[in-house]
Length: 276
Image 1 (tube, helix red, strand yellow):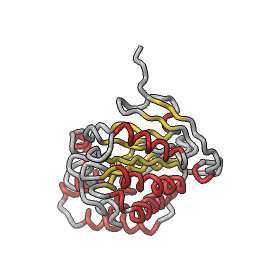
Image 2: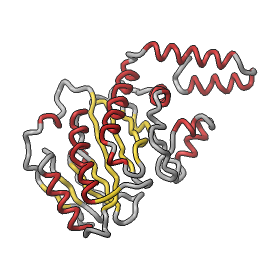
Image 3: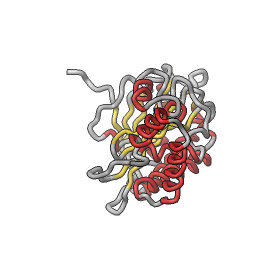
Image 4: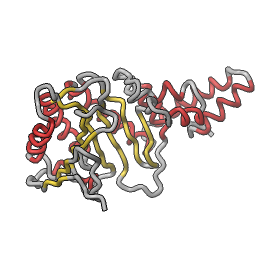
């Protein structure tokens, strides 16, 4: 039997209603902050203890701390986790927040980014990831490609510098390769998509990050709101004008190319679920 190295600290603040998902909510959210502890100034273990003590003051969730391995507690997605990040060097850590509301994500952004500024730094290795999903999964099949195009057309996927080896623009990969080839590329180290469909109802956004990303709180929250709005638009088809314009654009492209290319392009567009 392998003994767990995870330490658990009970929540002391249970009055944060903005963080709690209720029966009327349609969506749930998560967020992960990657950063480095400045070990030239601080002791890693001591800093993590200080960060844990400060987080206790602004969360209603238990905190899991493990610098040796990833926490394995069954309810870890409902806890704040302070843990190692396998893509970073030894002084790199990740703080992930519990499943929460849209306002809950903003609450944690406002509280955690100053902790990064106080105790650490961010560089081209580090990023911030958002998770958006529906509470109910049955019957939901989110159109990833339509969402990707909407995010691309509003410059969300290219708003931050690409981080080679950590996060690359999914549009750059898919626009140059077939769907099958893109999936093959995705499995190779260094070609992580900055937008990924995790499940039929679940999107992960990895576009945000880079040097000093933690100093851009307003930009991060504005983009988060846009990602959420577009998720709702695509899931509920509330932006019919965008879909119609996209269909017309692709039909015109199909008509303007030779037969063999047209067949290949038509197949790709159909596979993406954009047109029949």
